[in-house]
Length: 364
Ligand SMILES: *Cc1c(COP(=O)(O)O)cnc(C)c1O
Image (cartoon, rainbow, N blue to C red; front, side, top):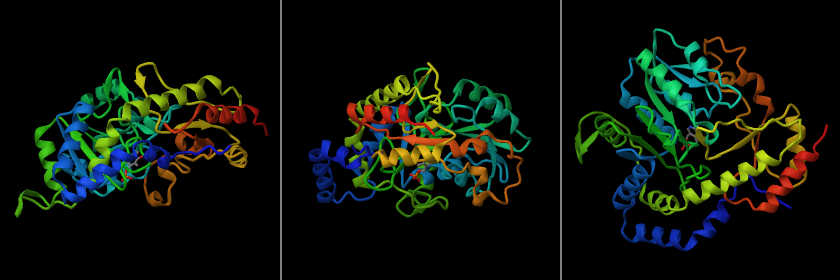
């Protein structure tokens, strides 16, 4: 049996008629960049998340960069970001001439409130929360810290479309939040795509202008911006897929529950989460000190896996000149143990059973 890590082809086939039809419509309407398909998706996505505004942009990395740009943080100030994330999170900080300040993660691989506190200096201006793997961060404590030190909060929700903390969707807690619609994300386009969401009218307008050459009208450039816009085909695809997102999340939850209830091998640590969190399981990441052997054994038996992320951010060559004491970070010390199991709405019961029975039989 072959168990895929992700199966975008199977997902496409399940919605093929609708997808093919909307793509044909975008083409016959020549609504290629901006236009009614983008406006429709922006409205529907803002309603789904529960924010006033949604601005479609070119990708999730641009969404982070533009959101930080719009916040106008003091030049050279520090933004706290988790030590385990995709590099886009920290990249967006440096690209805005701000300083990256890594904070360690806890057992759930989310930045803990105590570790955030430990990284606050007189130069700190913001906290970038990453709801990694589709798990909501501890927003009550993080917002309390932000309040105490008067810091802005940006939520990187690239892996957490629809995740919720105490009944409220992530992306509604901070000053501004961003999403990626990279094809492999829980809500993925058929190319690159991203979005910024916020309740702040002025910030929304600023992001809209920055993402479109600082325009207020066709040639009315109020400021310099950049070109990062969602295109019509991506928006139309996303609008169709948004209708299935909750069903897909439910299937991911079923798969995660099956893993959590049935993996019993003491060599494997399972992800930890809390009752106050609705996880959307973008990734299901286990820990095993024999990670390489386990991955090879699963591969030999037809099961694809992934690693998120093989190297903690502070240990990447990109940060070799970064001057911050991060030597004892849990994120660095345990990166070699992480293994992402197959996860997605594509998984069938017999595939889950196959993966679990392999895992439970694994031994050195
Ligand atoms: C995917 C991802 C991004 C970047 O999104 P792109 O659309 O690929 O630019 C940012 N942050 C996190 C945590 C991600 O997983």
